[in-house]
Image 1 (cartoon, rainbow over the protein chains, first blue to last red):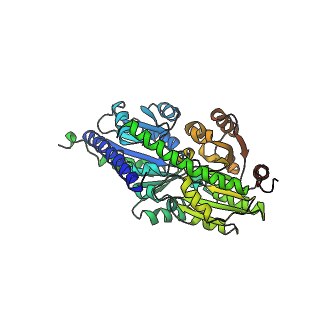
Image 2 (tube, helix red, strand yellow):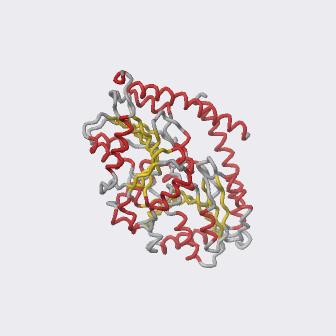
Image 3 (cartoon, rainbow over the protein chains, first blue to last red):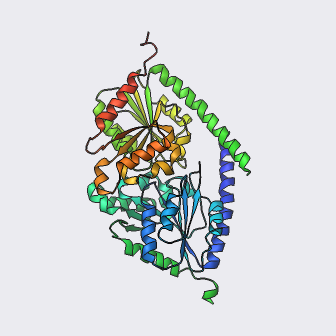
Length: 226
Length: 226
């Protein structure tokens, strides 16, 4: 297959995805739902962070879409917090797409003014290219991964509006330079916001919750805005 | 685009890849080169493990092919050990393929009976489907990633012949159950070999070096076998 034909196919797939993402975005805007797309390497701690976040948000209305190649494990962990969750298994697939998320949203029945957390498949490459209709991508990095990751996987950190440097409780045990991590993030995306956090100890959680609440507040339900 | 058409395209891409991989395998067999394809999430410690491995192997002839979306960083780290390395930047691509590796091999000029290390793009999904002509895939897991990863990304651990549980020096700091990690690996691949290792402290390195040497010894240069 020629390079031109491959590019044509890729453009076709991404353009179909964008139309699904556009439809999702319209649904979310109509309800004043603030949606974040959580992206990262496998094992950065997305699900643990999400469970702690849901507990801390108390009775705020929210829903979760979980993406994984296989298993219902993550949705089960979320449901154990009391929050509604829909698991999407991508099988051979390496990312969630707009079509999958649109279907999952139909099963969540989110109230107006809710938050929607979409936990993508753990993959620092492919999910960067797929808009799901979210308000923003939040990239989660475990500090154990090393400071060079933003430079080696620049697409993801260019696409993200916020980076969470997670597992900072492990930093003293793994020769990591958090300032260099931040400098490398800003090299690929000068406007990126950064929060240092440990879902385990709770450090940084207040900043993350404030970030979420501020963005939800900016997202007004059209009717309520009258 | 229909699902049938997408499957047709995928089959076409994988079959082209397999023909390149087949050619690579023939070249490597002709030289008695033992080739491993190192696969993992980003930040599992592949490059550090590789640097320590090269130092420990002393003057054994070897070469390295480094795959990353961007930067020459990893090849630079390998070259600092004195070993020859070729960097492949995949750009938007999420894995190395047989074609890229074939070209990179042309630039390495490996002697007979050498070892070839191919460090794939950090990604637990896509590299599982692409044969590069290697003798085996070695999956590296940082213990910080969590015991559920083999179940959530089963394709990679089914494709691998050896799993290295890396960064075990961090295990006491992150509530990880190494026996459960091993049990989950064997649930998806009952025949997988497993080595617990810390590239940082050197624990487990002897087992890994013995594994490499034993497999190299099994790979006899055709002429020398006369």
